[in-house]
Length: 516
Image 1: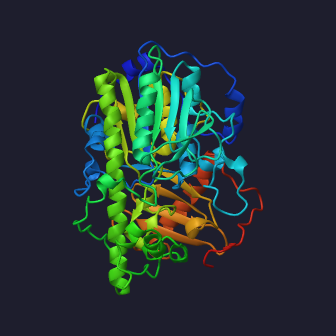
Image 2: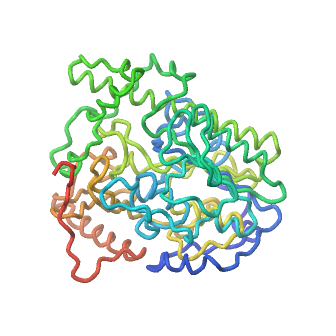
Image 3: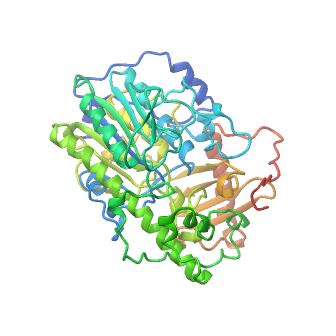
């Protein structure tokens, strides 16, 4: 993995940013700095196209090894640039992760800790209007900024010269948008509407300054309703079952895994609530066969909506080519979180297991990144995107950001890079009933703590148990590893200002409508 510019030369051109250690008062510092002047970008600063899907599993692209799903336009970004194989999110659900991409902060710091689906959640848990985001800093530095597609944060966008966002979760057909504050309904499939809106912005934007476009799809989020032109795709394809499909949770697995409602067995109602889906699963099949049919229908529809995303990614990439913009446009492609596609018997996300927290991460910039690179060694996070894009644009990244710029990785000379990261999950009780937990992931080990009383722990050896089926927490042979990782969780929490007050006692579990 290398680049066409040396790190020294790139920093001379782009300016050095400081995206270092987090401070406990990061949010307060961010608000204090909102009014401070920002250095204007130099001539020739790169354009930025940030593409985000919703709930796209890392394996749901051709470039990551999927042989059934053809995604030539997504793949093109990685083939013409860089593919990260170790990319993760710090909270695996839509709104918190999206806010982390924007701010470079963990969810407990920026305050968007849930999707707003559990009791007691209020509108003010959206991003505050004075919360600094990377588009806001780019805008102050002279970029023309736009947000198109799925926003899904409980506040209106700030820091954008133009925005056209889905209202809430949005619908797959004839979606209602809010365009610069005004409600507008568009006709067509949402993948295509979002593509149309992105092209409209690119055609109308001022051409005397660089642009930053956040281009964000609803797909492949449920309910997985493809455009009719894709109805026949995968119709005769048998999707391979993931290892262990249909098996019960191992006896040493945390009870929390069996208390969620995101098992594929719970998807039955989804295949009874409209005529087209009803025809995809025979309700009279024996339970074991029916579970397999539900899985097949789920993944086929999931793949179908991604075909529409891929087409619309291609439309925008073609526009960049046709207008001479591709060479100096940084393109980032990712998802707000991963997704279970039958692993552990689950769909959805939330839990700190690999299919949920791992995301695709592709980056292309012909002027600064050599084509065909693969980074399979360094763990990169959603909180890294903001400081990375700011540094590459020549804008100083605030030192309170909790992510780190990837610039050293792009240059192939990482003197010091993270060996682990902290995961956090707060939304409970809520949709799918994933209990509150946090944990640490290293290259080999993962330790998960469900911290409401009665608490539970899980330890997985990712090197020897990549499917995370064998919980080693209670094995005396691994007591030293457990102690080391428990201490590391405490250290990582402290480093980002997540510290329990003296005398703190974890609350008892309050399941609400969730299984106790």
